[in-house]
Image 1 (spheres, rainbow, N blue to C red):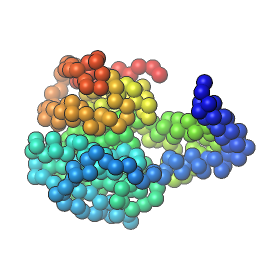
Image 2: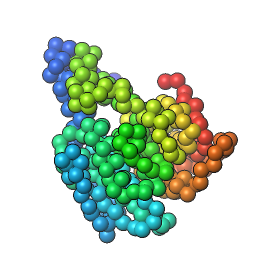
Image 3: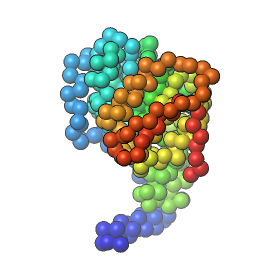
Image 4: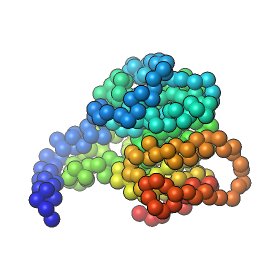
Length: 311
């Protein structure tokens, strides 16, 4: 173990000890991490992707939520993940426009150019639903990470309607994400229990209420899950549980982590192929295999219900 690793272990042990002694203080830190995104300062690969788009603002809970739109075809809404902004899905824009789709993207509350300092899950879902309903009818929503989870919530509880839904790197359960994040920071069990109560107050519901797999079993649209086996932010087991919730198409990537699939040409092509596939009921699963540029092994795009593996 090198000196850097030793130092990290010592810091985690120190945080664990202090958070056991002062659980309320460290619970507040964990709550803030779960609710307050860091506004992205990193340059985007797709800063010019939305050139020529019309910008509109809509009020959600008294907050200004901006969205950008271009094109006249079937409407596709792009939804970014935690700590990012609408540029994060810029890799999809030109390909969608070239295929005749109209493209829109928003900045979620407390992200990008949107108002707000915290981004509770229900508020993000309300923003997605408000923008989606302003653009209706929606042909598809393509969403990443927490944006994927809140897109499902928007359809489940806030009347968002879309014919198709693409979820990239989607978590399965808010509680698992919150607790996992807290444990990675070294918080003790005492602090985590208090953190859960604090988060529940902000969400006005228990963390257990926010489960993507449950929502997928309720909503009525065609769904494609895209997930990398080596995603360290959202483990593949979470995606497998989501896939088992309903009749869902899956695209499992051997490599790519949490963010790189957003810019992969073959992922983008596969998503666009999915947008053009018509619903066929009572169809047995079939597969399409191709070589993914992130790895030597092939990637399967399966139609039908997937079975989750135990964690």
